[in-house]
Image (cartoon, rainbow, N blue to C red; front, side, top):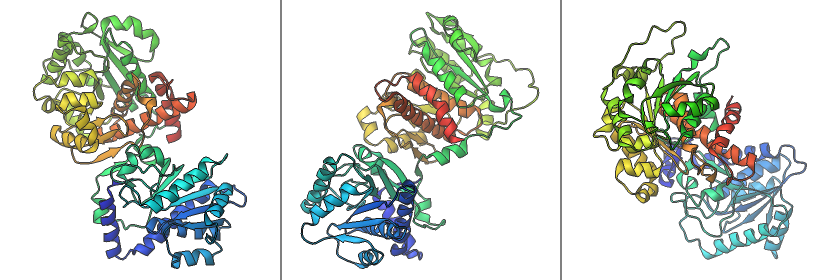
Length: 539
């Protein structure tokens, strides 16, 4: 799904109209698509009823087209016009059997109709509005909210293109805006819908095809997208019946310290849960006795240590395992000791005696072009997370020393350390910041947080459409890093591995919160346990 500004969407529609797809036809397609979604949701309902709040703009027209179609499918439909004249679309609606709520006591009639309706369509205001709302529209929306608040059972609220009162660029929201259960947006997701506070009013989000031609330049030029289930499912590798562990790659994870013993296990288990064939954990030697019993599926590399933290001479030991690694994760739970920084610096500089592994028998895991280039630099494809990022920032020219298209997974605080920008500057325009530094560094940036942003050096950006406090818990970042590493080990390219891993991680957080009945009780282990449920739904 494309993610667009309001002006970009206007340019797309203008080009489509000039090319022969008229605005009227786009409206017809949008309204029919909206109707199809409503029909699917209520296909088992007996004598369903819909009430539409119909404004003067295009989304009001979309609502009328949808309700006309619903009437033709046997629904009972009523329209309440908000500053809209009785035009041809209203005429078509009434001729099909729909009713316009008007006359004396119109608002009382509306309240009664909403009270018995199955669906309420919010088509009052579209994507081009600016706040504050005009008084008459604000009062109408406020009165509808009062009606809804007084009901024991609310109708299912569907916002047409956007909830009325949302600024679809900034994400600002009028206080009179109606909370939607579902927002059906046309052709592309408007960027304000994936910002707070607007996101709290959106509910579920679906995109309707309005018939845009495949060769539409203004649409195809959009490089920012929203991750969705169908796209992620298509990225996952097939799992043939004759597979063995080598089929799905080896994830090598260097992680942990005496202060953060659990990080390595969380990352390692996540790599396995997402499908990696073998996970090798490289940890400071004292951690092995504590962790091995918790994670019998892993193989282990015991790293030299100083006080339970990776020592600077550990690079030799780790490098002996590079030949068999299809992806290398560095950093979770490392701590920020100087000795560990020297260890990373030596790895990037190639200051480690490497032994060539014995020839591999049987299946040879196919490496991508990116992986082959990284192997020539004596480093597997890399993912750097957590303390590894803070330590990277202390190394001169770190970004040119990493393998090409490494994956960096900072939260805003770590991004601040890497860039020198304040957290406030980063959060103010997350997409722009992530994209800017992905291009500057030449690596994939996963800027974590509400609406995680994945940016590629080639300009492509994907946003994860999830914001949940379920993921605001220590250890969830280790799970994310492990998911991405497991997918990278299976042969996904850097950007796809990052997008798929971030999407699966976000969904697992939502699943965990749903299972527990609260976001407050979700632990990183709960997110990890929910990964298998997400993977099952993707098959």
